[in-house]
Length: 140
Image (cartoon, rainbow, N blue to C red; front, side, top):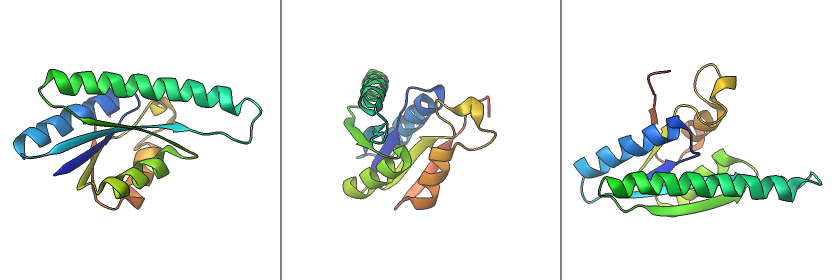
């Protein structure tokens, strides 16, 4: 089974990483693919600067998630994607990687501005080519 796990460094995405690790270990042979998306903002003069900041944040989130996985005996694949929408990038990566399952946190870094499921998770659930497991935390 190929499990895709979008990460953004939030507690929600790290909980999704842990859930994916547990699934992978209980369903061998499984592969975990970590993906983080840096949003490209081409219309703004400051777009390149913002993209670089988002890319650095995405790389840090991937490194943190990879460290957690390796600490639990799982060596994940890592993908840094970029595009206009994190949800679209996650769905595109799921298609390209032929993912069997996406494990995503119910909210991300913008969690305080959302009341229920986050907009990225909601879009991924709607447009995903495969099943999606939405992981909640105690705060949900």
